Amino acid sequence: MQKHICEICQKEFKTGNELGSHKRTHTRKLIECDICQKKFGALRLEKHKISCEEKELLSQKQCEKCGKDFKSYSSRFCSRSCANSHTVSEEQKSKTSKSLKNRETEAFLLNRRPKHCKYCGKSTYSLDNKKTKIVCVPSCVESKKSLSQKLSLSLCGKTGGYREKGGRGKGCLYKGVWLDSSWELSLAKRLDELSIRWERDTGKHRFNYIDIKGKERKYYPDFFIPCFNLYIEVKGYWTDETRHKMTAVKERHKHIKILVLESLKEIETFKILSDLSES
Image (cartoon, rainbow, N blue to C red; front, side, top):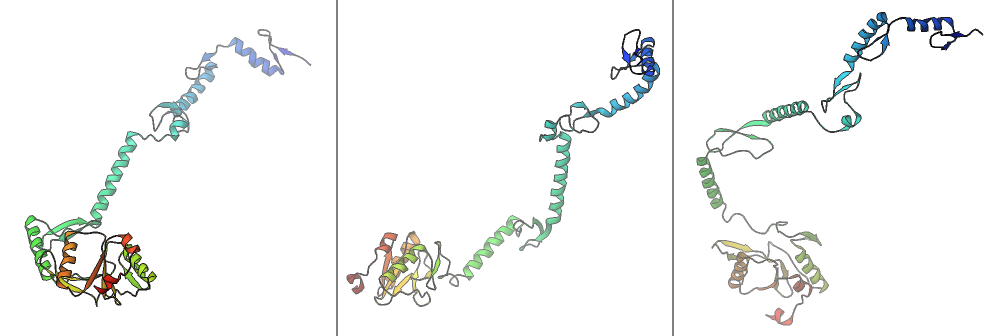
């Protein structure tokens, strides 16, 4: 097989065409591209420069997050770590804040409805998710106070009394009877252990007295023991009003017997003594 060897650089080639094209590289002058630093002939360099400049322009980009210049044809960020980071550009922050402000103002205007003062009739405004404004000026506030005072005086003596589930303690139902606290439940169970019948009829057992402010009130005892004609009051928290109430009831109704239990220990160790039943 005939060998095709270059006479200048002694390189071997398979065909004569390859050897001829190689020889031309020794005879013609090659020019280096300013962009990619590759060498081409004069005619081919002009075509290469056009395509190389287009590629260079397309590859020059700026990162959307950090603002760094980089070369790429499709990527929006300079690196994968920058793409996965949570940094936001100032332009994106301003766009987000503007959109949020617009949403808040739109929601505020949509939810706002005109209201009217109940005293002077002047229109006011308030959001639906807040309390309605019913007073607009200080003079209306004074009229509101005078109206509330008149209303409280007109209802004096018509409200109050025992209300089921109206106590502060944790109430519950026991054998179909509502008890206002856990101490009352303990006393009811203790009476059942002693086989003592008890009643809790608020409509039947009530006594009038004068409270600390001089008003007529009604006292409803917690328990009534029919066999001993005894009333039991469970009182764990004392105030000046409650102390005055118990004293006033005992002074006004001297014919009734009232026993006050002030602790859970007294309830758990409760017994009907002979002197208590006879007194």
